[in-house]
Image 1: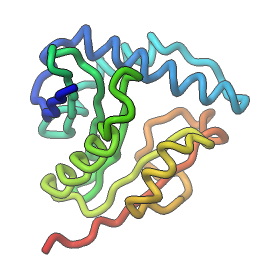
Image 2 (image 1 turned 60 degrees about the vertical axis):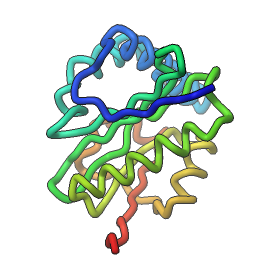
Image 3 (image 1 turned 90 degrees about the vertical axis):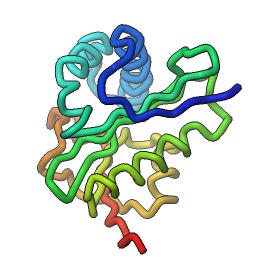
Length: 173
């Protein structure tokens, strides 16, 4: 399946992106529930994301969309700049129909490269405890476990269920 990955300046199809965010949040909520966490609404979280898209699009952030050959949205990942030299990697998701083709790795690597172009020297992230797929990716790319970072937007009630990570980006040669 041919895939196209594009950093966008506006959402070409806001409804499709919101639907993707609902799927993403439901997957994350299910992981949190599995370890005893709260049960927020995927719909409310997706609506909140849409209300704060200005933080995820230029100049403050970046949104990377992946579409298949028919133009269907099959994955995404965002960057939220939290300081002039630092950003968060957020909301990476690959639909099941597009898994197993290296799309997650491409979304991950492209966002790291873009964060460098944005002038970031430090990246932060969070994920659900036990989310082995994401934790393995972060570890592979040199992220270290840290306490919660001050700019993290998640509710403090989620702290027992999340891990926080940091990566100092090497100088570009």
